[in-house]
Image (cartoon, one colour):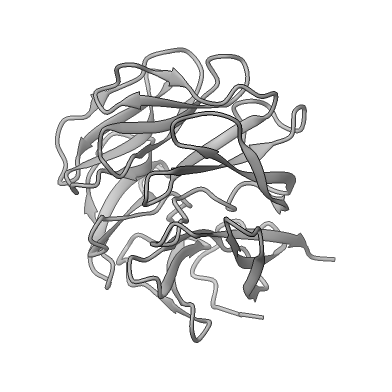
Length: 293
């Protein structure tokens, strides 16, 4: 059981967190560590040796071999949510930090080794989800004029480009490894479903068609498979992805087609918000939860 100092008073949800991996071919689950507080959203580093996760507003690096967690120096960015994304070369990390001035989420970038955050999106709220494979663009969900859509902008900052423009929530944009497409999730059909579009926003195409609410598509490094989080029909409102639900991690071919259940677990928010694929496309890292008695 890991006990880490709580950096701030962000919600802990009164849960025990289990950091796990699953073999995507065999379905075998492996428990890496148990935490007596909330942790969320593991990213796998390129070297395959670490997982980056968030807890109570801060980011931590988990060494898989030693099972030790180390606080990442994020300067003033101490109210980060579970939208952190590693740069393609793993030199930097981008986060969604809730600024002290108004409490709204904005995107910042700082060195993964630690350092001062640089503001990328002055407009708020902005929720990060993707970093283009060439390192030049960020993709994110943002509320502008009362509507949540998907936007991109240069990773060094600049003018944002709106890619979707429909009532309801479009969220979770993530680039394919070849940089040609962005996968995302949208409620435009009534349920939350997985979609794909070209990087310029054209050819928006629905990819899942079931009766579940499907969130956060993540493309494997070898471009073959997409993992996503699925809520049971009737358990949640289509535009909501709460914690403490029975959910599934599902896999589908990246060209489309039937999906299959990989893991069933108690979780939801925090389980698979970011791309958690291992570098060899064989495993996924995720977090399951147990309520404290």
